[in-house]
Length: 207
Image 1: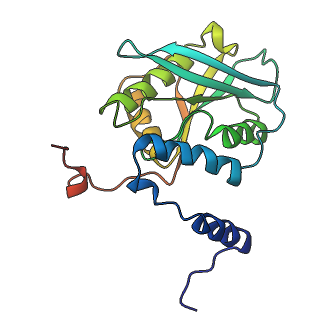
Image 2 (image 1 turned 135 degrees about the vertical axis):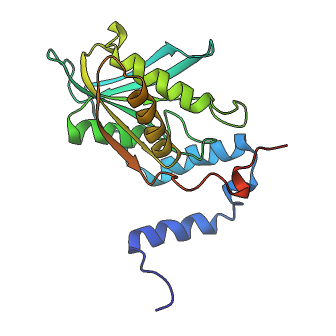
């Protein structure tokens, strides 16, 4: 066998995507790639499903910007303090938003019985580094203060994210390690983050 095993249902999905004849995402302009990612969610992800709470929020960002957030919770109320997960979506720091990662955030909230706050941090190329990590750190610190808009009292934070969001999970955790937030980070869940060396050609500043 020359090809790695791929589960049959995954193979069927990959074959379907290949049959569409679309160019790879990295060959597209950012706005077009973002739209394809949103469409792919409709094909590949389960429905959000029922949740007691799915609420959009906003908070002030570190550079005078506004950071959109989305709260997911399987419980309508949480009278006692408890952990709150702050989730950073993937997408290569260029793609992704609150909608593309809604199903996974909703499922995490249900399965782990935790409030999940998804963060819509600023994306490249419109926003230059360090906009994304700055937004993620600000969001984590905001959640740690148990703001009234959240409707939940955080006793601790769980940081999580996939791909670029996994990298932002670790970056945010280190920022809060160096200068603590109002409550501690008790767990991290970086899902396939980028952790390689940053001295290769692809990391050199753009001209």
